[in-house]
Image (tube, rainbow, N blue to C red; front, side):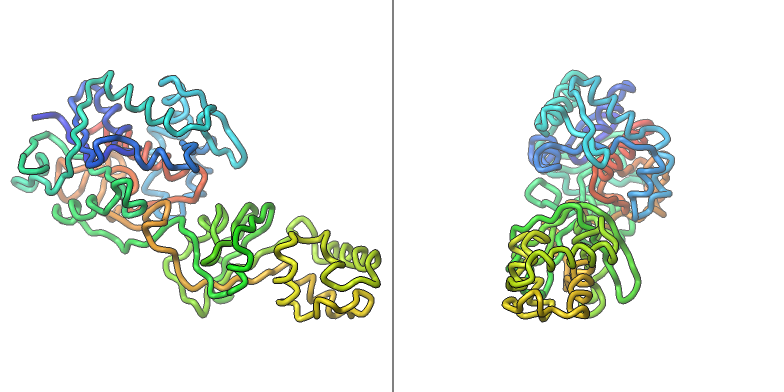
Length: 405
């Protein structure tokens, strides 16, 4: 018998266990991998983007799915609390571009190790078994079954993530457990995921990383997303920070409607770009078109954009008409990429969808259906853009739950 059982030893599970133990409660973590923080170890390309050094309002602006549900949790534990928490555990932090917060060491292992040390100091036991069911009696949750053993507790927190990165242990168990207690699971789809394109030139551009471009996402004529940043062409389509954020705005993809538009020169107005083209053309009047634009774009992109422009690569610059030049400038300001589908959910950074927020108390994270059952982190139907916002959701909801476990 223990005060609380926490299912999942990731960001949310560890934070909840630490905060509950600091309040004098006995806590046990069930982590099927046996080791905590497996997904934490790979976040931020192994550097662990723990949060975003910005206000609650700025966080909410970066949470497209159910941000209002999180206001109460953030009022109790925000990004600045997260930063203080890890620095007090002996992990110096730094803030980089976009207010992303990383350990000074650039090593996610330091974050995981700090959590492990604090769990050990507080006497939190970690059991390396998979929870297969909840113990539900008289309409309440009072424990779990793992292996062939029943483990009793006053409360149970489900914090075992979504379905993305299944090799880290996020295999969707939390949804199954929640359903068994009567909860509704909203439609699950990849969140923060690369996008597949039928355009063959994406594969030709594979490995090309674009920086300081503006990526816009359209559904038909409706603009869903537009932001300046970085992206990457791949063998299947496109990826990178901008693409991952754009994917959060798509509930579903209609191949005949959804498209991306890349402004390759966002720092120039169309008029300024045309002036730049005129200067470049004037300096290369007797050269082939393909050679006359070499200083304008990455070398790998030139054959592709020339093909899309319809201007012959060997056409002399002095023969290019004003209309052709204007059309080429428009192509630079609106390079098209069609999209046909998401990459698989196991390649997504987060799972969009989850336990319906209508069935969870925003103040306590307790089930409105089954007393004694709590939720934290990715298993809840709320998710954010890249930049440390999703980990902050995990920490804030975990802290809120820990006060009532």
